[in-house]
Image (tube, rainbow, N blue to C red; front, side):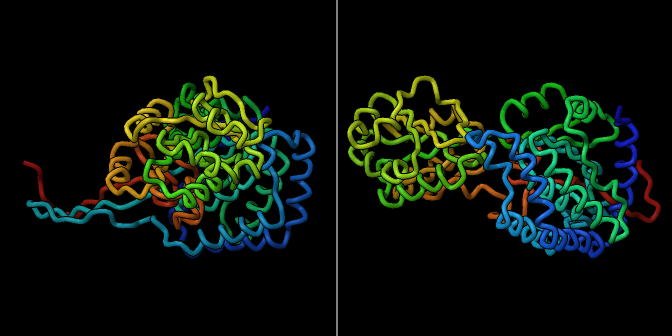
Length: 415
């Protein structure tokens, strides 16, 4: 039986070493890892094939689980990008002199130990490690059993990169893919400073409801796009198709399309590329009538109560609304605070949408597929925070640090 207390203790000890390292030392380890990913692709792909063999290819998580040479090259590139970013550690957030002469500075410091629980996404192992090390944090990783072979191959390379650069391997720990490991992390008060679940709604709800350590919620996305009365048809077709089909299994993929009733005649044209991609549309009565005969019958399904569904598949909800206000009301009721988009040439409508829609990322005339740390210039992300307390949106290096006040005086006494 695993001694989780000892595992967490060693991670805590490593977390005290990391801030003392230079940024160059931390970056060198990440760069070493990137080179190992490039040179040891066969090893990673072989382990990934073992995981893939245990999963039905029709499972929406299959795409998330799969590693390819191209994806591994992308992982290596992201690692090098993170290594080259400026570290947030020691960054001065505020500096002022108090009336009594005390010099006050507010600076960024690491959290310490960050625990991450995630599902069938082996790339997360690399993303989390690189961001945590660069920001001076130790990480404890708890992946799903679906990706266990891939994650163990990844942590092997990570430990090799740490050893080659003289950094304690306990700076990155992979827990067993068991329920006991999850329970241990969630109860590791005083050892794990914050826990971040990265996965579907069920995982996030479980972590939030059972954790004794602080939690940052990430990931789950019921994502909308609203095609406004003043939307450009060609632009809208491209945005909707990209948002829905670029990668259907990721959290920024489109789940529900809202269309203004005044644009019903354009609905077949708006959805034409979705038909070519084989997207199954769960349409309300008005949308069903507009698409019948203009969209493959086998891909048209009555909507029912699908508005709270995160599809993660080639499926999408479609609802007709009578106004911008009705679209915003639908998003308010069914959105998850992740990413929302409006397609419109009406600047007043765009401004209202920006102001009234409550989400971490709000887009005008863009697909929600841009909600991604790399796309935001963060190098990678530890997740997309959908909560309001603490970081919100893609979480890069700054978002996984906290702050500390440093005060210097010359003998002042408080009256």
